[in-house]
Image 1 (cartoon, one colour):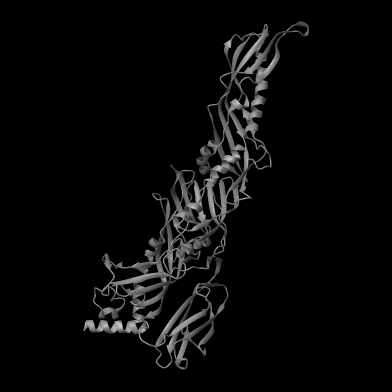
Image 2 (cartoon, helix red, strand yellow):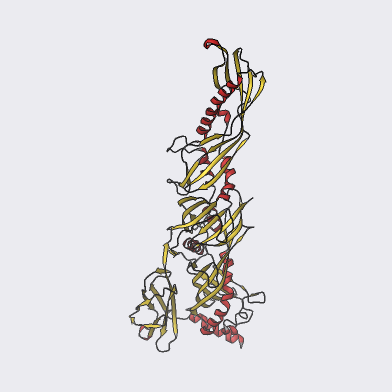
Length: 616
């Protein structure tokens, strides 16, 4: 009896799939195109039918009968702005029997969009606090060279033929000439203190233990001796303005504001050889110090100032800041890891008393291939023309997270840029999967005719061990709306027209020859983000799946669609959260050679944000 029933089901499949003679009934929606975005209150729906007796055919659009004009139909559909997802579900029926012969479904999305290849403007923020700048200071310092031996080379004359011992009647009893001696002038090191201020960054250098050895060569009764001058600290104060580089907005342009200011704590002196305790030698030392200090000040200023003013060259510290900030790349590493093209040119660099914010536009697209930032999607993956756009205000940042915690670095992305990322990943095959095992509470079990009986009782005619397969095929990209999730999650995720198919998977039914049921699922879910310190990744978690809509497109075994829908509405809230693992993780690069340690994940204004500290 079971074999007979299964044979009848397979015959029905063959007939339905066109194995029998005769034209195949078709229905085509010519407008609107699947995935259309609109902000209009209504939209025109048009289409054609074929392969049927036109005199005994009936077309329904979202349940309403639409008159035929030959093989064509047209109507106007009202757009529900609150629903966001507005399906165009068209059925072709036999007018006499009301049997559904063919079905088609396109999705219209209420809202604005960003065209494929266009930028989501002002959609990415990178925040570096003053504490974060402290982590940057050694890197900036490593790009600056301060060598006092080049300021005062050995042999330089500091004072020449100075009358150290005046004689009577305007004569001079002893003169001194001071020259720089070996070892050459030196320092033990220097440090940089970078602090963000309103509209500039203060980059102040402290030079430690400046030492200059001099030879005092006397004539007449003036003695010859060695003199060492030292300064415990020398401070060089400089201010720097940051802005996007006009020639390449992917880089930060740093310019020195005015010339640096040099300040000594005072020279100390020590005789190292000879006898220089002649009573009047103190005046000589003061004269030497008076000559050396301006020379060193000018030397330090010349070494650290902008060499050509408004020209292309930069001051050394400005250049070192540019080099350090050039090492900050969010787009490249993320794009390579997710196999998408991620472009993020700067539109602003804003300094305030708590830190620096780098604001970028974002363009995220897919590219087919095997190179960096490219993917090799499976056949049938959609190529989408646009992504969902939400107008949002660029966020502002303080010294602490929205939760009141200190941090080093903050990264925030707009809903629109997030949706571009989801679109590009869908085009690369994200969420396109075949399910051959399911866990309905008792552990993973193979998908078979027996395990699917609850879903499709008509499979009772098959051997319970017959392998089955559930295919999920996104036709559009999931997108964030900018609203909180239905369960209080960070964001609301809309899943439009996720294709679902049930196939016989016994190896004897290639292509669609084993197709049992084909449908489309719309859903609303919540999306949360957590940060994994081990992998430095933002991890997606989908939950609170609600507002699930199921539409059948093919029903090749005459399954009870009302019953299947009821079961799917029961199962899908459990199965859809598994999409979170399908979305994967959002890998973040190292910054300045340091890893990220998560502090807080949340929303900054309307942007999705991560706050982290920089750690070895």
